[in-house]
Length: 172
Image (cartoon, rainbow, N blue to C red; front, top):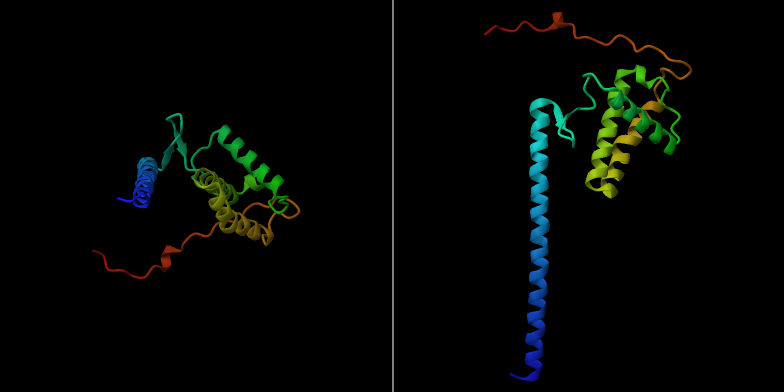
């Protein structure tokens, strides 16, 4: 084997070894991702079956958009997040009385939950998507909202379905 052929063979061996190292590193990363997916599947199953998620300390966390009783800490956390978002983005269209409007409370809690999830997964792309698909449309809806511009107004009575208008259905 010529010197040139030996150099080529040695270079090929080095490339194969380098490639094998990259494959090993990728295998470790895939295993870590699979483990994280398994953990997420367990957490999702818990939410779907119980309506709650497990807190880091092992306790349960109510889904933020539920009407269940929230703790003072839950309320303070939501208020702090809303105040921070309004300050950072110079939001002036959210009425100061938002806490008196269950719909706004639920929507803001869901926005915060989605924001936290976006920060946890891929803060770059996920947060950009959060702003594009959640935050800015929410602010847009607030801008056309008529209630509470000058002072607090109680929410109107919610619509309830008139079940008397159901079609006559055969009974089983």
